[in-house]
Amino acid sequence: MPSIYTYTCSHCLFALPSGWGGGSYVLDDDGAMVPCPHPGEYSRMARVLGIPVEKVDFGMYLVLMNKHPRWWWLPERTRLFELLTARTGQYSWCVCEGCLAPFRLDIERSPRECPECHGAAISTIWEAVDGPCPKCRSGIIAARDTGAIA
Image 1 (spheres, rainbow, N blue to C red):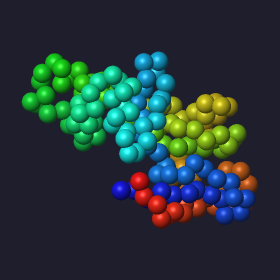
Image 2: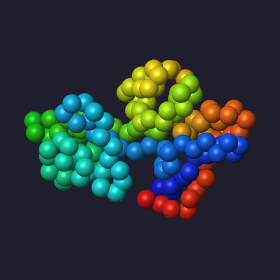
Image 3: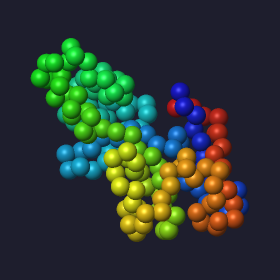
């Protein structure tokens, strides 16, 4: 189980969202990102997609392992795999270095652009750790283990 971290500047105490630095999501029927927090991410995905949770649980295992086994030739299983591949993913918490807006972004699928100011100077939380604070530029963003796990 992963540890929960806080991310703060050593100088001005500017804070980024705490947690793991990201998480799972599912796209709803309108294409909006619905975060799926742990625990219970599979049940939320199943509710949004309108399918039984058992199918999401096993299907997500295959998607995350990047495998589409040959025995999954049945049309229903192929459609499930394609649905999960198209509508689920992992987001990273990001911060815009221009307007300081924190936001969720799937950096594998989406353009690196701030949804607030449309700036391209953005960093994921993990890219920001041990780097200069985007707010004051004097401190360093530090990750601190809270001791909690999820």
